Length: 488
Image (cartoon, rainbow, N blue to C red; front, top):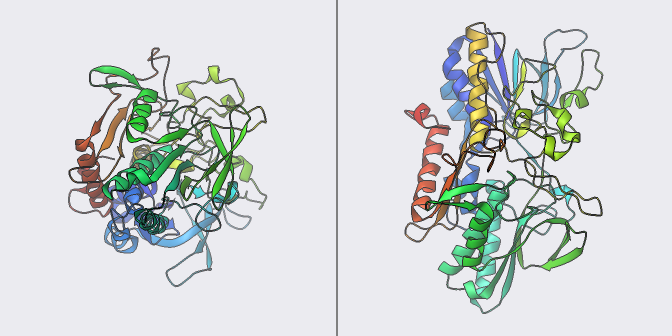
């Protein structure tokens, strides 16, 4: 009997676990270790953050779903990995610490035959002084609970605006090396839409602040897309929407400090500025989960398994990170999601270490990096989770000695539906596809992507599609009938 341990129960980990258990059956063990008792459909948190949905609409209990599927569920967090075992035991294991199930604080050594690291991001609010809802002055929509708090504070602001007060709203990224600009984009326009619905849009000055070199970069080096029969740059697409909705923007910005009513930020040209706010939602930078790794003798090998940010090394070309941007290639990106030192370990979604940025790296004259880090969430995460599950199925059941399936971001496409306001008849969303995610200028020398698979539109139909996807993906995640036919 083989045991597969999956660290993390988000999109990538949940996808890997549920498919793997379906394929392996009862003859093999699938164990999911995740500190959260609830599964959260994170893309809809933005609607929770504007009081368009409740927390209950975007979360569900994991334990009953895993029990039904026959998955061994441990509500715990991974502390360390011993991929060589220990002096007294040759079996590799992870050390976990329980956060629930009546065992909070207890630790356990959990052996494995195969390990999938799907831990997702640590929300690194501490990277910027004053950032975040817990010890800072900004709200967040990164978790369902954060989004509830954001909604409450936004509603308080709306009450004040209805009483005649003018307010300044600041939304965007809270550090020069953030990813997930899409969530900030969506929240910006959902707040703007809500204020229009409340009849107080004229009382608000809304500003978007980002580490992107220009609007529409989104950490993928920007894009060109087919829209209305024409080829349009992402910059023009985004700037047109911001202008149409009356939203100001600040780009090439690193927020270095947040105070009660203002942010301090540095621009790529090295100049320092301030921006006041009455309400602010800023996305934090992401870090790895912070796990350690030890060899058989108990020596620390964390730097051998994880990069300095805490993300696990896989089959990527990491030598390119120190070489000029012009030498970077689509071939640098991993395909098997497999650690090359310990080949029974895999990392998917945000947990894997990218070889380098996708957007061009930039630094201010002060030496401050100001550039988006690579997005690895949503559809790509799920596709990686499924590909690794397919490979492990073949390795466990069919004797394959190497991974049989790949999920390379420079060879896969992605679809994104970005909400620009929730409403059955008044809502809008930008529906976009891109292929591939990481540009390949050898195959597509003009734009880096195949324009037959890269296109976008914005309108009410996009909102209906996003609403449909909300229900479809929750249905899939709950393993309801025919869940396997819903695509990743």
